[in-house]
Length: 450
View 1 (cartoon, rainbow, N blue to C red):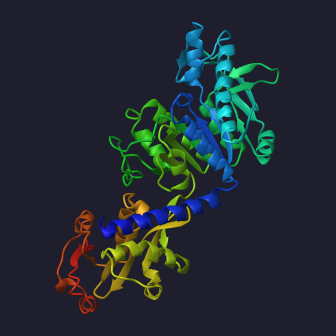
View 2 (cartoon, one colour):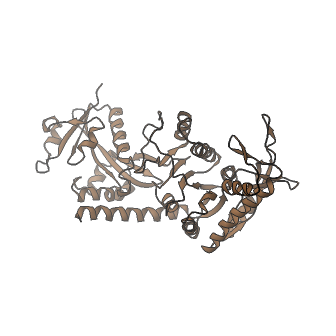
């Protein structure tokens, strides 16, 4: 094994462990709402998913589960020779079908509860939903399909405080005891209005939204796909733009997720995740990593580039060390970074530092981009690109005529930002005087003048 490969793996593992501890502390006491599609319940890895939910709960996270029931209801109605009819994705529930809908929904909830019990959790199944009829809309009679009128928040909060995991099947009752079939997606989303929800998960067989083939606009043009082509994270405005530009490209499930993610974020959820339950550990990866295995829509600030401060210096040194060990960066010390701290920026994700860079001013209207480094777990996340673009824009705003940089390994990467080959003679005088001829760094230039 190449010693450098071992070093990279070492930094990656250590970085991941730090990240997990940070997220455990942050999410302790928060409420997660999980909508789990019923087609996962027959999957071989379903017990593993439920065990992972148990681990989340044992780490101090409060959990409410909403079972998706579409497949269970379809199977139940088919077994009794009843036809399933839909309008605009909403099931039209007749009187004859309602008892079978209830039975299928309660059965899905019971299946989840049995797995929670096996994982050592105290699941509790109940219906704390007041509903009303959808009535007749534009000539379509929705019969016994309803809308949520109110969620009994006080009971749910008491159960959560007593360490129960409430399981809420998508059946609601009106004030005189009439039952209605309601959307499990609507139920999961509406919970965000009534409860303080840290994260809402839609867990099914969709592993996220792929960027390839989608039209992007001004808010989404810099979205970076993960290794498997997924959009890892986007804010509400970006989600709305993708919806508007790709109504003919996205499938119904993706459209439904994005619409409900936007709605849930506006209702109060901090994060809304779409991920597959068919891959081992996908839920834990999504919770304890800023990258995750699915697609996340977020309401509040998720990631940003900001000026570095004194408290960031240990993280800057940590991130740079792997690059220094491999000879990609020249060594820095706490003192050298502190002296030029105003030149540094950091890339912050959920209050954790995962990238850094600097823009050092020189004479003759020139400045140097330096110290670009990204944490080992985020090398293909687009963080490095974002930092370089940011520093280029800062250079423009400050009125520099030209940016330059020295590199030994990243020529091709910098070329795609518009940098071109330069010479030692083109460097500002003070930089020329300190050029390391034994290192033989290549010099790249980027004119900023119009």
